[in-house]
Image (tube, one colour):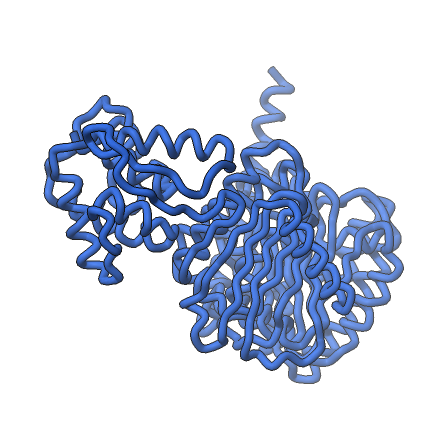
Amino acid sequence: MSADKFDFLMYLTKTTNSSFAQYSSYDVSYISKIRSGKRRFPKDPLFLSSASAFFADQIRACNVEYAASSILNGSREWPSNTDEARTIICNWLNSESDQLARLLRSYLEERDSSLQGSDVFTVPDSTGRKEAAVSFPPASILTFYGNSGKRSAFLRAFELLCKDPQPYELMIYSDESLTWFSEDKDFFDTWRDYCFKLIKNGSKFTVINFLNRNSEEMREGLRMWTPLILTGAVKAYHCDRVSDNIFNRTLCIAEGKLAITSNSLRLSDCHTVNTMYLEKEAVDTLSDEFRRYLSICQPLFTVFSSDNALELNNTVSRFSEYESDMIYVGYSPALFTFSSKISRQICKRTGCIALYSETVSLSADFSKLLKSGHSVYEILFLPDKKSLIDGKIPIAMNSLFEQEPLFYTPEEYLLLLENMLELSKEFDTFRIIAASSRKLPDNAFLMCKSGGSAFLGVSLPKEMVFHVTDPGVVSSLNDTVLNLISISGIQTINRFLIKNYISDVRNLMKKSSMKKSSESVS
């Protein structure tokens, strides 16, 4: 009896089975069976209490109080008090009549299929008589309230876009606080998955970043965008003109499809009204507004690849000569740790003369930096041993060499690790931190100098290197890396870990060689 009512509330608040399952800790298939009538609505008071609390929040977040009040509360005003709303929902789910829920579910299905139609409809009572007129916002404009409402708006919009096979140009700007984004981890994971699906489908992002944030918000912004930027599908900009930072705005536009906007005061942006527009004229107008703002912005970073290797080479040289504390983190050792012996060996094997000249120059600047007393931390994610033996570990910053990606042989990689250990013995200010689990996306690296600039990049399938010069962003990148892995008091442990790693790989190589010899004899 309550199953149809539960199903109606799920439709009314646009709640997916997985979303409710996550909230209530029930299995997704169980929720699906309740909605389809294959399982009875549970009599468990805990389930009923959990459902009532969930829908009380969602009804307000989705701005469907008018409909909920007419169906659940006899057309009386929907209470602003959450506990009162929970009680109303709980009592309604426990009541006998569910015909009304079935009728309204049919209406909502029809209305959703068209996203058009009248914004006023008549609700029949349990006997079929027309009883009350319920006002809904027009299908082309939807409103959501507060932080939870903003999250609901974004998820609904991105879910809608992912259902469409065509690629979109997405334009995003926000100088509002990022609290709405960071306070719900489940939202972040779902939103990021939607973004990757859109990128896979060919969609592109243009993002105007607001850099006048505190360090915590800057780190949150980097957490949001770094994995997406590394796909190459995101163009990032910033505006260096001074803002009063009192009135704030968010724009999220899928060109030609939809737009989300909100405006707020800096100290009260958790009470925003968030509006989603589905009408083409409104979306086009907001797109024009975004582009006018974009016209006074500058790129947040410069993108390099093998196509502009000479410019990258000059930029890396200037970076290398700048004397400051440095952090490198990546899947592959930094080029500045190469010895001349290793450089010659790789150059002879690959025929890449540029690698030799570049690594010798970087190593000289690196040695000078250490002798001047500056600290250098290299956080190295040791690769899977089998991948190393199979020769699948790429050399970092291949774009410098204007050719196809270069890969280490197992012995070259191990020699490089041994050289790094020797350098750390010679210079107390060079600290190697080995990690067995990745904290950056696969094949990514980050190199930054405090007070200077930063390089962020990926190497496969085609390397892209992003050079960032804004002091606030560089500082946040630096802080982000330091927060990824604790760097205090673990140098001895990591020296031991690296030595064991080298020994294990050499033993595996020896076993593999013996096995091949045995097979060739037989």
